Structure formats: structure tokens, C-alpha cells
Amino acid sequence: MRNLPNILSISRLIATVAVFILILVNQPWAFLVATVLFFLASVTDYLDGYLARRFKVVSSLGVFLDLTADKVFVAAVLIALVQLNLVPAWVTFIIITREFMVSGLRSIAAAKGKVIPAGVWGKQKTFITLVALGALLLAKGLGAHMLSLFPLMLTFNSQTVNAAEILLLIADALIVVATIWTIFSGVEYLIGGWPLLRSSDADEK
Image (cartoon, rainbow, N blue to C red; front, side, top):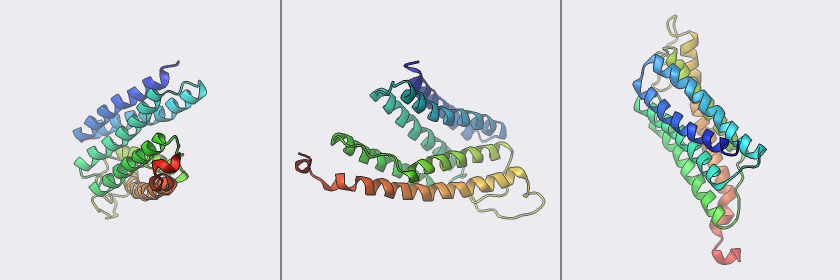
């Protein structure tokens, strides 16, 4: 039980590779399998943190694996979707840049013995992003390809108005929302970490 949170984080990294490859296969069946793996990996994201706190087995290795798995998981899926032109590069740029910025701020805070807690915008951003990506994978698995924002195709007719196509459109809209939330959460972290950036080592003594 002590190592279970770490095992879950490692399994999420392994699932990331599988989902990445399946997306690049670019076939409905592959997207459906990727959707299942994506869902299971997203669940482990919650479980490993919960179990670590529940059984008081939080460790430096566990924190490292959890944070690394989270960032690699989302980044890999976004990069694969950019490859297929299903997500624009600017969305991936914004989301990944925010992760680098937050990691940098947390590193500075840790070096000064401080902690920058996750803000409301950040928690909501994570949830919206996972829902958006999961919905997109499912929509592609169901064969959707005619009604989307990326690329822009908004022709509503008897062929496009069905569950799969509507789901794809909703997923694209959620990706836009997730990007906006990413920007706001980045600003939230920057505001929280600004005193640390302005302070010198002498100020900390």
C-alpha cells in the first residue's frame, strides 16, 4: 500500500505513451481505446494523491512522479493532437508554457522554504482540460470529423447534426475555455509568487 501512489503515477506515464501512439494511429478504433486509457489515467491522477494523503505516505519521490506524470500526460496528448491538426499549436504553447512557469515558481518557492498553493483557477483548469481532451478523443472515436472549431467547420445540416459531431464541437469549445482558464491560472500563480520573485536572499534572512 505504501508504494501504491507511486505505482499509479508510473502507470499513468506508461498510459501516456500508449495514448500518444494510439492518437497518432488516427483511426476511430484507436481513438476509442485511447479514450478508455485516458479516462483510467485521469482517475489515477486523483487516486494517487488521495491515497498518499489518506495513508500518510507522501514522499519526495511520490511528489516528483505525480507532478511529472500530470504534466507529461496532458502535454503528450496535446502534442499528438497538434500533429493531427485537431488542436491548434497556440493552445498547446499556452498550456505548456504555463506549466513551465508554475514549475519555475514552485522551485523558487521551495528553495526559499515556501509553498505556493494551487489556486481555484488552476484546479478548475485541470478539470476542464481533462474533460475537453477526453470528449475530443471520444468524438473522434465515434467518427466525428465534420463539425469543429479546429479546423473551423460550422456547417449544420442533416449529416453534421448528430451526437458525435456535436460532442466534437463541444470538446473544441471546452479546449478554448481551458486555454482561457490556463491564462488566468497562470496569472494567479504569478501574483502569488511575485513577492518571492521580488525578494532577495538577504530579505529572507
